[in-house]
Length: 323
View 1: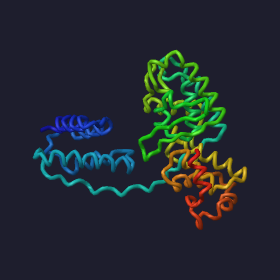
View 2: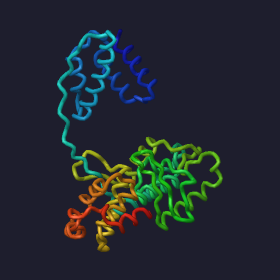
View 3: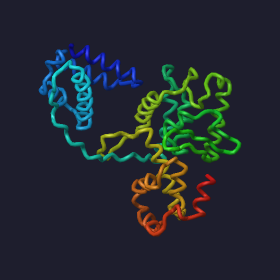
View 4: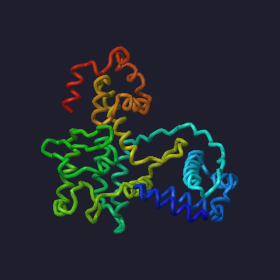
């Protein structure tokens, strides 16, 4: 069996199991081109090394391709189509140095201003008002991208100023209050969509009334970010992402509480509940992203955390239950 035939059969098997497998299929076909479509039993360790050690290949990419090829070869070795093949020793993982990006309020304003320019072309699947309202909802709630994409009309209660976030992850479904500003933005948007509500129950839709694909939204956001002139200049290889609006929401909230002298022992658990976090530790990570000029306040606002667990505070637990 030639490598190209083995790849297509393997990809078909994976997709029949419900996987999209697009990127993996692309990598396997690149490997096939790299070795000139040899028969499976002609492939050697040197062929694999030549493919893995391609130019500008990061350690993360190298390890991902190594894992993909290992599973592919094991599949065909178990079926007698190729002999045992010793793969190169796996590289150790690179240390993770990723730091989320925290947008300034000026940058968020720049993003919202740039929406009209970014989405003005007819080929854009998402109109400017939908894009702007989506970004405001994402930033104002600190929710996940998937959670806002999944919002439906019945999840928005403008009268009570609350929205219901539905999620299948770690019981994150929750009902959260929203600000007066966000309520008015959503009211305006929902009025503009009043005529096409019957076509799709989702709150945020494309111009043709279908749910917005997450990949399309992420792609448009990267173009929007460039138009707004927002980029990292701290040496990080990752540019600001749409998901960083969730991080920004948390950091801006904590910064506001510090300025007002709030008790973080009380407010951090409330923030965790609001954002659908599983544990308090996952919210406390945002403290390290809070501006350094507030370090003294951070050290003094919650002096009793090590001595008393926040779950032992009945007033706090009642407060959380009422969110």
